[in-house]
Length: 461
Image (cartoon, rainbow, N blue to C red; front, side, top):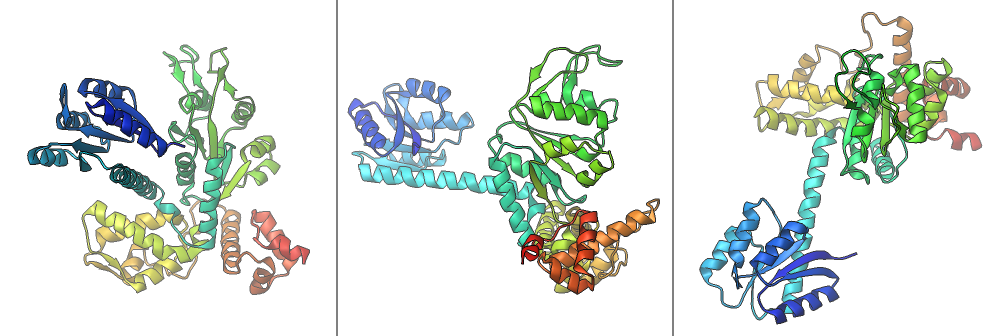
């Protein structure tokens, strides 16, 4: 793989030949130009990693060429060369962003060192920008708990593949962020990322939203419209709340995943689509399939790469790290620098159940930053913002209009999740800790769609 693509601009043919040969031997791809006009043509047509400009050129000067490049909005790394440059030229070039100024006759070793160091710096800065952007987008995936370390490793592996991914987890656990991470880190990062919430689109419009429609396909369809699959071509389509998709639409989605082609509503043309699908749900689709609410064959097709997001209460050790991260974001957003969370505040936060998971934590921290009058956020401030809820009690379980059976199942699930997390996923230890027969715990976990990490190993022993 080439070390970099270099453009050398100089009016001396012997220097162009020497540099082209020397840099090519070091693994660089080299283009040369004997003047400003040819250099401008090459810069307009090609993308370079770095450029070398001589100051004195037959049809202009290198510093003016550097200025044109900067006025055009390019941040191309540029190194200037000259055998008789004035101090003014050097100062002007530096102000315009030249990274170095090399005197002729050129030392090949010095030139190679400058190129190597410059490209290292530029690439490191690009990586840092990408990481900062990713950290801003993926803040809710922060955590050093075993489950989060494993999840990030799974995301990295999933990103390299092209198979369909099914992300499962409760509301607020960061399912969309995982989809975005897979897209950003994958081969389709330069393509579009389209999102569709299957629960938010009326059933009579979901097919049109997904596949598009032709003009006159239905009342109100005055012109042709591309659907999500077409708009996501070459990229990723994130199907959120896929468990709420109507059954008739599930059959059509299955066909698209199998055939990789669609037909717009009201049309007859078959359109090939090149899309990676990442689906997400907070439902147990396997259980929904057993009840006839979700197609088993579609579940199998979606669940090629399963990613399960843990609820925040199952990784309480990550709460301090997340809270401080969100504190920094909230201080910047609300112009309240210098605020701190006391140990007491962290203790209350860590003990709270967070039914809304990481999203609820982020919103809570922002509320604290806005409403706390002092720079120090203490335990009482947190309790007030939580509405007086005791940190150790299972809050957020009661929801008006929700049947007791559903609430009881949710409470049971939370208890088992936390117990399994506490015992490192060991089913036998969890059963002992809860005073249950291991077989009874297995049945409970299976019914709730839970599974201990060490269940199989213990069975074999």
